[in-house]
Image 1 (spheres, one colour):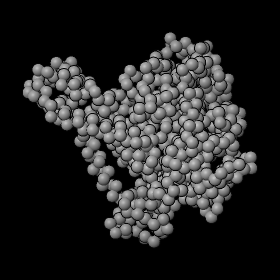
Image 2: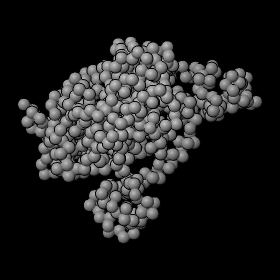
Image 3: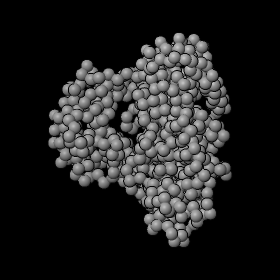
Image 4: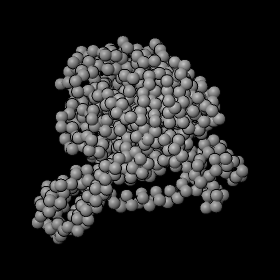
Length: 620
């Protein structure tokens, strides 16, 4: 029935889709197994991609040759660039998506790839031979063989849904959980844990009074996610809306606390503290008399809306009673109540930097199985697992991104070195080189790498080369073109910036906090120079000039620390043999078995003193 595949990907969520696409595009024959062909890349929670740090990840996926950026552009109904007030280096793209179109586009793109086969079934075991993954067993009793296996099981591993004191098995509402994989992996020696996440009620948008809410429109600027020519920016957008809870809402919600599975101890898994349920918010922040609610449309044509900020697992009657007291929701009709879901995950310290497991060769984990949360975090892991599975079965060098190269590198490095006790979400604060890892330069940083491994297209590479030429040309022009007081002072005064009394180079003027390229483009010579350049190339040049000194400092720091990455450590090395190491360092190092001294330096429990000992021992 089946040929032998190069790679089997288990699960068709965001991680599984990126894994299958990456490996197949690079030349592997891939089988993507999903429990439900109708829910490929389903947006289980909010209908949006990107956000602070997450938007950078989507652009990095796109720059490498992944599909999340393209799919988002093809299906988005609103685009906003977040952090506009913080300076261009901190901007983060975010898009509201049409939930159904998003899933449809992913399926169509996968079906268009001749190297991807799809099959509907559930996997219960990994077929393992001599310490290597060589295939999977399914609930239908099928044995399907491959050279590598990528597990992207999402929230389906022993998934359990909670609504008040009611609970039942499920990976998502109305979808079955997956049983068998956890017990099988544990029998192979893997360590598992439990986590939980939640989702809010879905509401009939016709029943809402938007006149009582604040409208949140999309940006008018010419933005999109993908660096490619495949997509275009939005010309028409749908608005989101903002309202707030109040004391009455909070009092009603408290009535249900005794039946809350979270407070009653029915849920053992830890949830994300940065995205708490509404009951957790009013319990932890009792001094606040209101919390923000975002009302998000789920698509172009549907009436269904997502109530962002009202995630809950309280009894459905309490949810309904409370939500009727939110301004604009007085006549709200439920499509379905909110719920919490518990699921199994596996500590990511059991993985290599490639996301291959240390216990079983050619077996890869990606997504929520590694303790992460969020579509973007899952998608980038799937991309990296798919890339590395392909490279491994073709006897090629692994592909690993360092912390100064990508947010993706930060995420994976954090997971494999530190593990996680709660759902891991990417923040800009986790990245020590965030000025280097901007959304505007993701293609410059990563497309050459994606092209080299055979994932990013030649067309993408040519676009990056042209972008570099455009930036260099404009950068040099602004450093040589002088602005006289007569031509620039009116603009400076309008921007609230002090006038000049002599000629200044344009780049010096651009360094002023109040001045942007939009101001300088009012000068005829600069307008002529920039009018044929893409908006993003102009923006990238502006960022480069404004943050040049900061960028140089981060690059210097990164280069110093990168030297430690070249000091390799044998995976069989016994750290107990180094007497001067602390006991905690010995325990952590022997457990994680870092591949380089750089990786060892980032393991929680390895102190600067321990690092000094390692430097001396390894001959530095």
